[in-house]
Image (cartoon, rainbow, N blue to C red):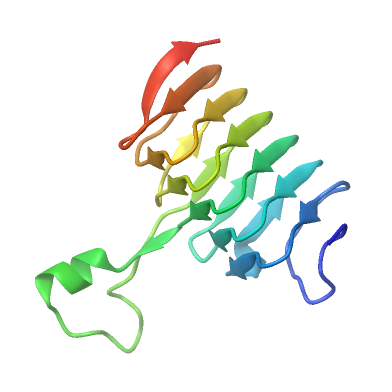
Length: 144
């Protein structure tokens, strides 16, 4: 797909490309900058708020989460009808960012400008600008 799907409510700029089999949740809470590329088989959850900067590549198989129900599951507490058992936290991705294939970005994370996240990384904490970070959990390997 070369353009934003008609059904989308995502706030985006020129040049955004979604590839096939991309799953988007909470579209009304997602804002995309200019020249954002989203690869095949990505899962993007915007229910807690997601802002993506300009010139960003989100590679195939990446999962970006802005909500979490694991505490509810781990504590075996009853599911609440008002969704109060769901923890939500926004994700912010800066400008000029490359997120490698099959990486996972967890709720509440901020990825700075000019960052490369290596493939198969688990991003569970903020990544400062001008960094290369890889691994599970994701660690800064080099400042650029």
